[in-house]
Length: 205
Image (cartoon, rainbow, N blue to C red):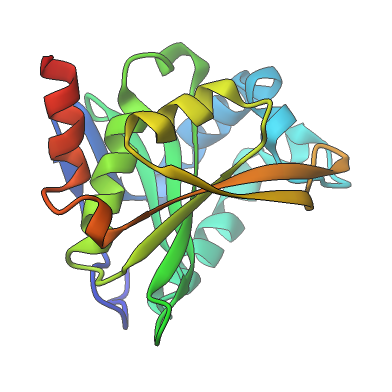
């Protein structure tokens, strides 16, 4: 991958069996297989598209997606990672809409293979990403927008200490309709000792 113009990228992060790494061209078949297998699990939370799930997540759809992510990363608009569990690709987590200047903020989106849900993979991955954003990437605020019906994702952010800040009506075009979302956020001041540390402490209690 070409060198990025913004701090904190590219980066590989790990904690226990969970890792974040840049996506690679050789991930195409694994990514496509994951997306195809998880259609019913993921489709309710995905942006509306005129293309079928099979077309959007075919092996041939992967290279243009990867090219787009790499382009965003190079110009400092995103930090796009693959989520791994014991070195196996199991999902994606992307820090997007990076804004510098007075804001120093970004948003995060993620998904995981259904067979690996409930193992603490996404909470750990999100904690790693936030600590990296507040450290090497130099950001101040991270936001996660979640549909009210997505109880599993809301538990993830609650576990990490994200606070509910907003309720957006008809906010994003998801699964065929404009959906409301709840906005959650963390700032550097909220977690002076790091989010991974907070998660580890919680799990040890």
